[in-house]
Image 1 (cartoon, rainbow, N blue to C red):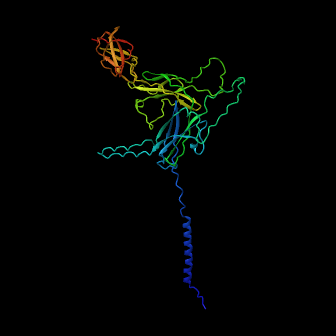
Image 2 (cartoon, rainbow, N blue to C red):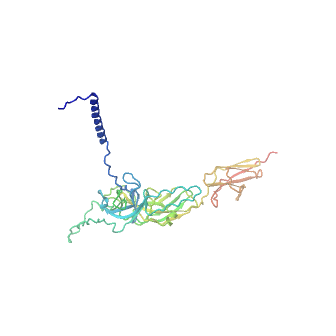
Amino acid sequence: MFLRVPASPERRFRARRGVSGAAVLLGLLAGAACGRKAPPLAPLPRLAEAPAQVTATRIEDEVLVAFTVPAANQGGRTPADASVLELYGVTASAPPSGTDLTRAAVRVMTVPVYVPPPPVPEPLPDAPPASPLPVPEGFAQGAPGVLRETLTAALRDATVLPDTTPVRVPEPDVEEDDPLRLSPPVAGPSAFGELKRYYFLRATDGGRRRGAASAVVSVPLQPGSGAPVDLEATYTDTTLTLTWGAGVGAWTAPPASTEKVIASTPLVPVQPPTEYFVYAVEESERSTAETPWTLQVPRPLNPTPLATTTFAVPGSVVFGTPRCFAVRGVDTFGTAKVLSPVSSTVCVTPSDTFAPAAPARLAAIGGVGVVSLVWEANIEADLDGYLVLRGLEGAETLTALTREPIQETTFRDTSVTPGVRYDYVVVAVDRATPPNRSEWSARVTEAARVPEE
């Protein structure tokens, strides 16, 4: 027979402490379980951002697509996982749409993309400069670029995608014997064609990682005007002006009516008159060979097309410096523009053949044994000074009293004979080679006083 012996107080305390410790341990384990890290998230897709700042400019039959190569992935990681840039195009009546734009367009070309090399470190003192790293062919990430496509006759027709078939437009049923019926049209044919050439780009790693597509841009396909003709350059001492004639096929505004009639509203869009861009042509641009990586969209001197056939070149005239210019016509179709072929280049080297203005307000004051002259200063920027001429009163020929131009606007003639009247004039001289001389100032006559005995 077993007898139960009551536990001592010390044993009961140890038992309660053990139960409390277990509870605390379980609480800690439960807390640790609640703070455990979740399974790792899936890595961000290593896809390049979309090319930015995409524009399309059509110059006659060539389209220049400008862009900025992405330098980061979607999410901001740099450098971008991009080694190839793809250009897509499609000729259609509406821009491509959908989640994958490449299904609604044709790949026009692919070009290489590279990560720009790090800058060459500064050489140590007394050390030869380090050779620059070789630059691969293609476009650098983050850099601007331009791609070109030539519009052929086939590209001007609607694009037939590989998985589609052309839609045949049914011809109207017209009987041969039907009489010709004429009626006044409600609206004439549209001045703007429906088809456009659309473009967009995307960057890839050359494999399955394809970046986001850029914005879609377009150019019209209507024929534009011909190159402007008869470009000429004239100049004054302050302004260089260009003039030219409209090219073949240029649109012109109808002459304003002199009759008192109510202005009519056309039923169809009216083709705006041809406008013009003016370009400075640098000697380096005309002699440097063009490569696929150095293409640039021409930048005109006038940001807004000109409605006239004359243009004052901004800035002051620099004598002795040759400058060359060319002009393109700008035809507007809807909201898009087409640039004409470039005109012939005109070059001009302004020469300073412009004399200063004649000095004004010349005055002479006779003193004892001296005649003092004073006049107003000229304001020409290239003024070199003044020459003072003298002759007997009424003489046709005057002789210079100053061999070199003087800077002052005053002069004291002490080589006079008292009591004899002299004619004086002042001439302004500039710093041109040879110097240009102004007309004579107004002639003044004066005599020095005879000293009193």
